[in-house]
Structure formats: C-alpha cells, structure tokens
Length: 134
Length: 134
DNA sequence: ACCTGTACGCACTTTTTGGTAAGCTCCTTT
DNA sequence: AAAGGAGCTTACCAAAAAGTGCGTACAGGT
Image (cartoon, rainbow over the protein chains, first blue to last red):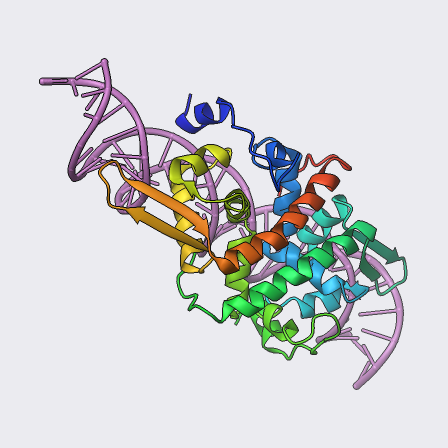
C-alpha cells in the first residue's frame, strides 16, 4: 500500500469553523465535489462560464471570445459543463447549424461567484511578476 | 502557423458590461491573469488556500488535511502560491524543522471569495451523477 | 464548379501534471 | 547503534490534458 493512501485512511481531524459541514467532503478525495470543483475551476471552464455570463452565445462566438481555446477543448468543456447542469445547449436543426449556449440558473449563480474571483485575479496579477511556469 | 494561433491574432471584439475593463485581459492568452487564474483555481491550489483559511498550519498538518495530496504536489503548490503572494512561509531555523504556512492579506481576500464557490460546489455536486472523467 | 462557414467527432502527438520512491540533514528516541 | 521524524528536493515514469489536423453535411456566395 502506497504511503499517501495509507495517510488518507487515517482519520482527518474534523476542522470546522468557516467550512462548517462540507470540510469532510471537499478535503476528502473520492468525493463528487472534487470532480465538480475541477470542472468549474479549470482554465477553460472558468473562462467559458465567464463568457456566457454576458448572455447567450453561439459556438463560433465563444470560440472567438475565449482566446486560445482549441475547438476540441471548447467542445469538451461545453459537454462537461452541460452534463454538470451549468450550461444549456440549444440547437436549431437548420441547415447551416445554429447552436446557442447559455447558463442555466445554477450556472448563473456560479458565474456571480466567479466574477469577483476573476476580478481579484485581474487586480493581483500585475503585482508580482508571474514568469515561472507550473 | 497553426490555425488557432491565427484565430487569436484576429481582433477580439471587446465585450464589456459586467466584465468591465478586464475582459480584454482574462480572455486573451499571454496575459499574466491567465497564469494566476490557473494557480488559484486548480485542484490543489484551491484546497490548500481553503485549508489555510482556518488559520496557520504546518507542513504536516496541511499534508494530513488535504486528502490525497502527495508531498511533491504540496511542495509545488506551496511554492507557487508563495511566489504569487497568496501564502506566506515562515520557517524557524530550529533543529527539528518548524515551518508554518499562512495566508497573506490578499490570500485571505481570495479565500473569502473561494469559500462561497466551494459551498456552491458542495450543494450542486449531489444533484447530478458526476461519473464521467475529464 | 469551387470555396467558405457552421458545429462538431475522431485519431494522433505533444505537453503538462502528478505519483513513487529515494535521499538529505540534523537531532531525538529506542 | 539504529531508527525515525521534520520538511523538503530530485529523478524517473505513468497518466491525463490539451493541441493538431482531418473529415463531414449542406447551403450560400462568386
């Protein structure tokens, strides 16, 4: 048995003050919260949700707006977030395909939490030099 | 020149309503905001910041608290976030090494934005089955 | 007749991320 | 005398994420 799996099997001393209740969830792996957390807080996920917070957008508009996203990543991100119930896909079966993406209600909630976060990032990004990777 | 780099070189139609001012930053790659954003919103980064929102913790306490993190990832995450000015490292040169980690002022601000986000995640994680990866 | 735009899916390769295990220093415990 | 713990670092390797390019169907423009 690897060392850190062993470490996980030990009891985590339940800390709870601000993180009341969900501390035992998020800090433990195997919890679905971890999966959703990585979906909404990864690079492309955040950016797509943010872009859609403005309103409904088509595939090509998203593609242009989120700078640097590849078509594959856009497709994957959209499908993942759709499965998570964060965004809604609305396809009209017209002949040049017309597909619209928008936030669901919970997606809108989420975007309202994400926006101040990105604002914080925008403010503090200039403070230090961020040259080194990883 | 690859296709989507070419796409990036085209002008992004500056959209600004809720995202006033920083829209041109975050949505464009090559911007330091992107780097910081990925630092604070990746899996381990979020979890470490959250853990430290409770207060100062030692290496070994963090290691036990954040379930599943390897020593390498803990070290890497801590060094990155320290360079970003989010956490502070305080090492006493005593003989069994004693090192404490805490949030800086901006790190505390950040954690206050992260907590509602994680609460949202905790609430919505149970709604759908999150079986599929990526 | 030919090319472009739309919204993808698929296969392949590259890059990044993360895990495992080992080592290290200096001291305390057994 | 040997083992172990604190707080890391490094080398090596596997897995996952992401990028690249190709194909597709059909319509409209030139």
